[in-house]
Image (cartoon, rainbow over all chains, first blue to last red; front, side):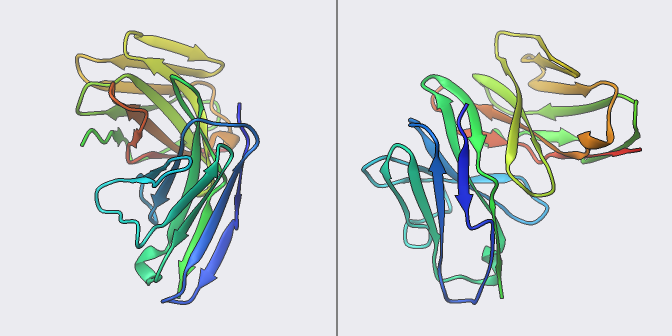
Length: 115
Length: 111
């Protein structure tokens, strides 16, 4: 199994600013994902973080708002840009356990509050 | 969208009782998984059942899958207060590894 460290665990940000969330996996993983969980809701996939290339975004999410980096097989960042109160959510990093295995491991999440 | 729908949305039981949560989905799947989330924190994987399996057990957990009805159930036996959490089902399609999560069931186990 993989252990995922995500930071910060929470933050309060002013509107118009940006927050970068880091995700570190303790082993090399093939696939990493970023999810958003709005208050009281389920998880929605933002994008697949691709190593060495641009992330693949889901419908409704764009690179300008959610730039993602993945420089290697163990690390990824998600930036939430130009923050508004509607961005207040929990953001979660996830990685797949192994090739052909869709069992996912999750970081502890980042609780973002925009004021 | 093949987003799963869990029911009930909330379930409150006494310690020692069994808890059953259901999940329905819309399209063909490769696997169905159940996850647990404590107080808005990260998700913990509980169990995975493949589309060609009908039932699976893990400790106090029992999962069933009915692909003809596109539904699954999660049974937690002899519940404990520590089982209090939100439970989500998640499906992945045959063509990719992306997970689609259901809306979740909030389980409260009262001591």
